[in-house]
Length: 70
Image 1 (tube, rainbow, N blue to C red):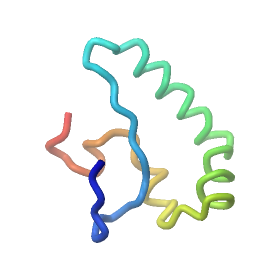
Image 2 (cartoon, one colour; image 1 turned 120 degrees about the horizontal axis):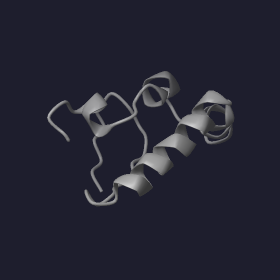
Image 3 (cartoon, helix red, strand yellow; image 1 turned 120 degrees about the vertical axis):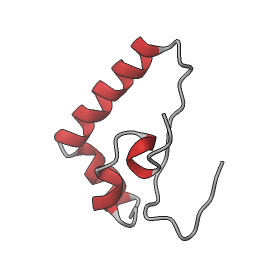
C-alpha cells in the first residue's frame, strides 16, 4: 500500500496479473456500469464521503494519475 497525503486524489486500486486480461476487462466493464448508473457516486461520494470525488471518478487506469504506469 502506498499512502500519499499530498496526492491529487484519494481512492483505491485493483491489481491484475498481466495474463488475466479477460478478468481485468470484465472487471472494468462492471466498474464502468457502476460509474454510469450512479451507484459508485452514491457509495463513494455520499455514503463514504470520499473527498475529491470528481478527480477519483475520472480515473480509469493507473496511468491517468501516474503517466509512466502501464
